[in-house]
Image (cartoon, rainbow, N blue to C red; front, side, top):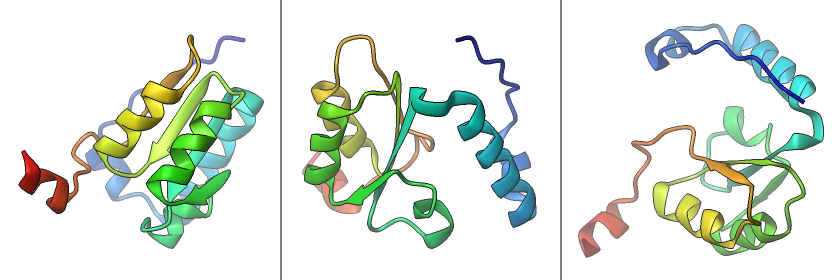
Length: 111
């Protein structure tokens, strides 16, 4: 299944009304069907987490990634969590971190 997408700069998304954003997310989920699984860290805002197929802490979500059936894993969390999910995911799956700048101040202190 091929899905066409149109790139949109992040700045454009930041000014969209909630109902428009919700509609776009719903349309994308419908188009991708079971090809996508969305993992949402429980620290995410309500407007993000409501779209998650699975919610939890980084460990639980990485376990979900290891068993996810979809081709695409969207990890709504910070970069080190998405990296763990990517390592545990199946060959051929693509792990996506929607915000590449999403970081964790505690993890950053360790670097």
